[in-house]
Amino acid sequence: MGFHSLLLLAMLAWTLVSARKCQNITIPVQISARNAAFDVAVPRSGLEVTDFALDFGRQGNNYSQSILHDYITVTGSYQIFATYCSPDDGPGSVLQILTHGIGFDKSYWDLPFNNFNYSYIAVAVDQYGYSTLAWDRLGIANSSHGDPLAEIQTPLTQAALAALTDHARKHHSPGSPDGSFKIIHVAHSFGAVLSYGLARDDPSATDGLILQGWAMEKTYFSYFVFGGNLISVTDLTSAYEAGYLAAGNQAALHTNFLGPGQYDPDIVAYAYANGQPAAMGELLTIGGAMYGTSDFSGPVMVITGERDLPFCGGNCYVTGDNNADSIPDMAKRFFPNAKDVNVTIVAGGGHGLNMEYGHETVYRAMNDFLGSSGLSAQSSRRDVAE
Ligand SMILES: *[C@@H]1O[C@H](CO)[C@@H](O)[C@H](O)[C@H]1NC(C)=O
Ligand SMILES: *[C@@H]1O[C@H](CO)[C@@H](O)[C@H](O)[C@H]1NC(C)=O
Ligand SMILES: *[C@@H]1O[C@H](CO)[C@@H](O)[C@H](O)[C@H]1NC(C)=O
Ligand SMILES: *[C@@H]1O[C@H](CO)[C@@H](O)[C@H](O)[C@H]1NC(C)=O
Ligand SMILES: *[C@@H]1O[C@H](CO)[C@@H](O)[C@H](O)[C@H]1NC(C)=O
Image 1 (cartoon, rainbow, N blue to C red):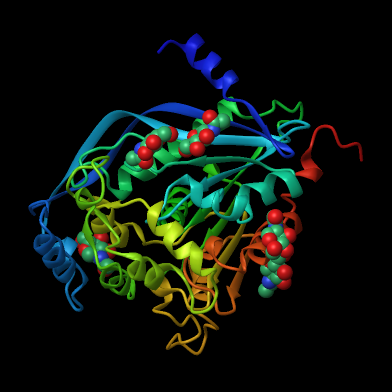
Image 2 (image 1 turned 90 degrees about the horizontal axis):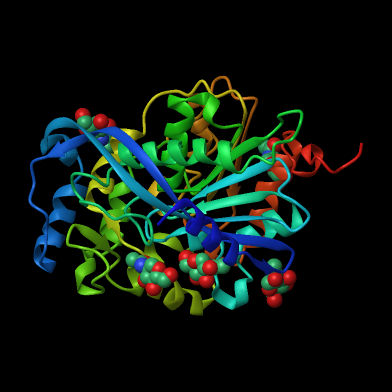
């Protein structure tokens, strides 16, 4: 498709949703990363998937390490599918790039459930005046799929996030005369691992981080692997090939994402029906991507549910460390130069905070934090006279 027809399509896709304009866009990226080459067969049958989970989640054993054969540079062209939204009185000069985690796609930030009552984008754009760019992660939903073992891994997806960020700086900056365009990376779970990695490897790529459903802790990841009761996604849909793994049933999704009593019972079925799988290459490389301190000097918020399963093992307040109030609080050590590290623990909350009753409080905390850190949309809007 030529540039002009893309542009035309983009213009046709403009719609007015309450007080915002949203546009679906496809962004071509040319990326390259050093992926791992694993010596393992792609599990196809239900039995093989369960054996994979048992091998992978076993304590005292680094399975990714044990099957690591080599590192190889993967280079390719991919399409990233994203939704860009801005307030209807103009884009302002602060953009939030929204990265979803495992189990979902970009609709995590704009859940149609209950007539969009749970939409993060509605709050960030309509109430706070930010622009947003929510993307389907590489390999997921309507972004390019790929080989789920060799290709769709954390390093390549982090490269996609870096390319998307570059694209946003070039194409979604309102071009304010004082050049004050800012990009904030807002992310959930695996998306937060990717956003942490981006800020660690290139601190100038971002102006602020909000890491939701995250902590710098790998110990409990196996709870998530076992809790997911994984199956091959090919049992559910032909949209993906074998090597993409999905939650086995509603109970599995509930276990991994929702705190007891914190959710509308109907959202369990909704989230399961609209869930997305993870590539096994992603699962095998998450741990390896969680390392290192970050020189990032801007503001950071970590906001995680007290009952988060994958990062806190269901209890963020038991740390085994007298110097840390909570497991997410330990993140402060990994951001020694940050302007401010705000760690907020959501009482009773599970891992998928956007899907719980507490979502409104969570969204306010996230956007208020940006305001209190000098990154409010209003203060840097061109059209606001001081
Ligand atoms: C954008 O894509 C989503 C699927 O991700 C679809 O539900 C929605 O209707 C599309 N919106 C527009 C304006 O085309
Ligand atoms: C969502 O629903 C709740 C409960 O009905 C209501 O109080 C709240 O204002 C709604 N929020 C939005 C953003 O529509
Ligand atoms: C891609 O988008 C179309 C329509 O927007 C949808 O029907 C389809 O299920 C999507 N593919 C995946 C893998 O989610
Ligand atoms: C497993 O080993 C890999 C490769 O050496 C390493 O990068 C990773 O951090 C380890 N994973 C965990 C969970 O410790
Ligand atoms: C973190 O930010 C929220 C939202 O601005 C604020 O209410 C809370 O007091 C902050 N927490 C700390 C420890 O400063």
